[in-house]
Image (cartoon, rainbow, N blue to C red):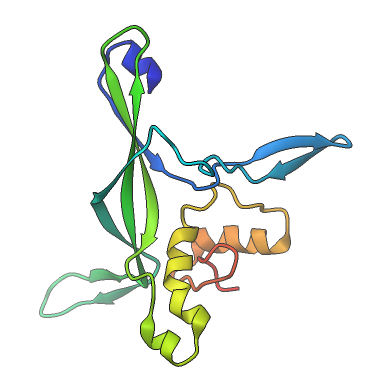
Length: 174
């Protein structure tokens, strides 16, 4: 983005605003140790959160096929979940030029962050489950796939036609 701005090429970059970035790395006893990258711990002075720029994104679910009255096979998607994507803009200035481009990163939020009915019947975890699942989507870029649960989650998230929720990645059925 900064190279494009320096070359005076107007551009907008898009991505996901991972709360914990990728990871920090240390080498201990000759082995890589991954540490949480808390890049937003003190805020981001350059970031402009735009709550009015949001989109609702469906995910998961199943497909339903039907035919009728001489029509060809039709298929529709019935999503199982929805999150709200909120835009967070960062200006990216070029070097010694007047061009400034925008990096737009999207953070995920729950459509409804608290379920009062669940709370009232004593299901305190259920009351905030939608918030936890939604925010997990933009928590960290690469979950560790070395443990067995990471391997199951990674494989199921890309192949499951009707994902359920797990405590790790929220897209597999474990």
